[in-house]
Length: 292
Image (cartoon, rainbow, N blue to C red):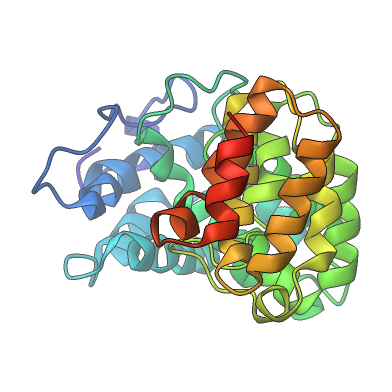
């Protein structure tokens, strides 16, 4: 779509996302995934479900000042442009945005980086989906949780859910508890990955860094998950906790081993304590030896 092209000339065939490689080549900035092509595709997808969406004006706003921004900053910048041109009521806006999504995914083998196209959608939820002021005085929490559930099956909602855990921890953990048994592995992984205390690129959850016990039942439920994608997240979550509470992680891993860990769970345990083991921690090394 060329800048200035109106909606009648776009003739979209249905929501899509720009093609992208499985991984970014060394030296290629990740931020390029959210450039002009992605913005124009996003505008086209929304216009496919809402013919009144001002695509050209949205593109102009989203592209203004985009160039120097890194990938996460671009996601937020584009989300702010979406807020400018989508309906003012949050629930109306999120219905349009969710209707513009491509089909959900259940496979975990060929993820690639194309999903970063949905980073602005995630920022839209985290920025505008918590407070009544954006939703005509009504609580938007349920609508936001439905949106995160939908988004994590296309990309990931691990970054967006953290603002809810920081500001509305009890009710968000309750929702996570309901997702643990979801048939989609991307949703189950969100339960572990989104609650990590020190998620890379994500906001740190200070309360979980200080006391990680609220997330332990999640890890307990997912430690034998049939998907390696989910189990790896559990291991990384334990690795996060071990940075601040190593004895808690060691005790958890030792208990799992005593209960008769499967080969998959033994791998998870070895992965969880690999960093303290490399640093020479004797207890971590002993756990890795037992988990072989």
